[in-house]
Image (cartoon, rainbow, N blue to C red):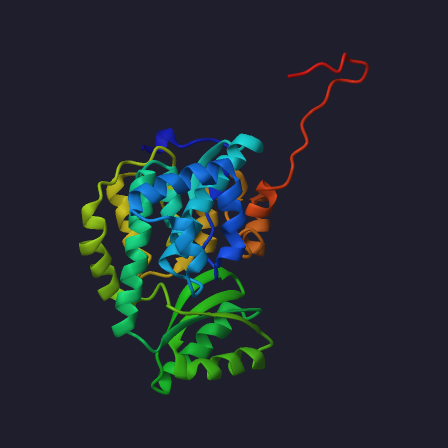
Length: 325
């Protein structure tokens, strides 16, 4: 895609990052929504097992089955938004986990390959962090400006500690990877600065320390896949650039393991395409709500709960015959 092909003002699809996910969060949508059922059946065939059954029995917040189910739900909700809300995306972005459904929606990967990739990456994560960086977590917190975060982490490094900013979500909302033995120190320091600790993620994510994981996924997963050029502009969540070919899509997915998510730059990338509204397609409690997003765009939500609500259809005009299909 050349610069001359970039679209004008319009709506972008945002596929959110994945939070803790259990069957209670998605099961009803996957079983009742016709789009989700169709995609789940396709996923079953590609995986060789019944996804919803495995998901219902799984333990933990980020099992292989939870990750594939989240992936399926996001794409089903994007279809729902296009069918029911009239969303016509001119671009896509997927912060963190959302890169996977975004790559499929823009045509860089088939849905079947996206399902297989998501399952295999989930296994790589489990295998890698079982033996490498076992003591590292990623902690999110809010209400601390970036300059104070950097002062905090620089002081930690001066005392021999290790940390890495994994996610820049907003001007005062970050995720930091560090050793679990230092987590209490970080939480205490955040409180002392008037900040609010949110959630600690295991396994961790987005750090230059995880180059071994990047190599594992490149060799064992993405080497088996053929990437096509995106049919819509795809924004890289690491720097806000437009991914213009299949090689770039592959690189974006791999870079996610070792480069931080920079959501403000992704927002700026969307604005540079003329995007004025975003539809967040998937279970989301973060990317559609932070000020970085709401200051820049009108935000439309496409969540499992909304998709299962009865939708009112236009009735006959006043004084009409009342006939219909």
